[in-house]
Image (cartoon, rainbow, N blue to C red; front, side, top):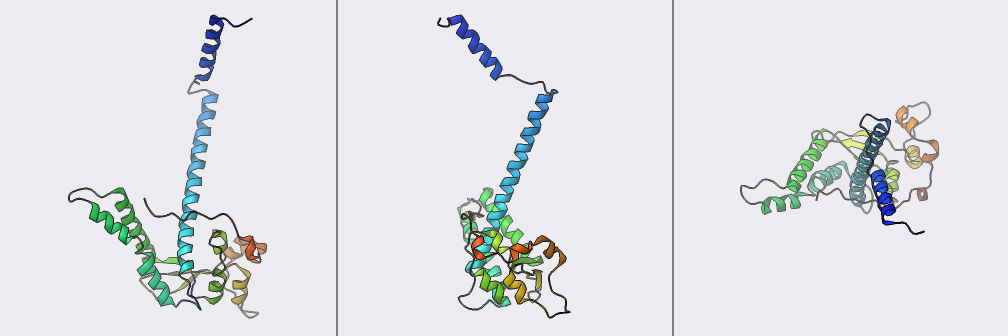
Length: 228
């Protein structure tokens, strides 16, 4: 027997009532839904921050990868030059274009504000101490040349130093390098201390130190840290 108009109306009304069911704010179900929404929001924010961090690192590492000389290594003076005159000025043209496009008396655009803040922040980091890949260290440069420009984790095996614009002659080895080729190149004679901290030993799996370069391959990461 075909459903009558009255039956269909009742079914539709029941479905609508079920769909639009609202829980009391103090009920257990409402609390569960609220906690689920909060957790989902937090996880989404964490994922966004991780992506932004990876993109920023990929951008920075890619820059230094292309700064590797055709032969040999960079001098400390060369390293300061590419940071001071190339890396820190990379958005100057865009910033100038934003200033030129702004009519007199008009507030700064969001892009201009972001570019100025980024420029000031990076200049302060360089002034107080900027951590960079040690392109003055032959074993590090040799290994870095073999990077596929995809896997950020591989770069973490290289040697890093901290330099600053206040005292350009001062160099601090912030991360001595984890890859076997770098560790072996800096090995000291028996009885002498090796420049590898306990933290480095704890944070570096022994198997990772000797992983082949083919282990480090993945999809290309987006290198898009430029404000839009």
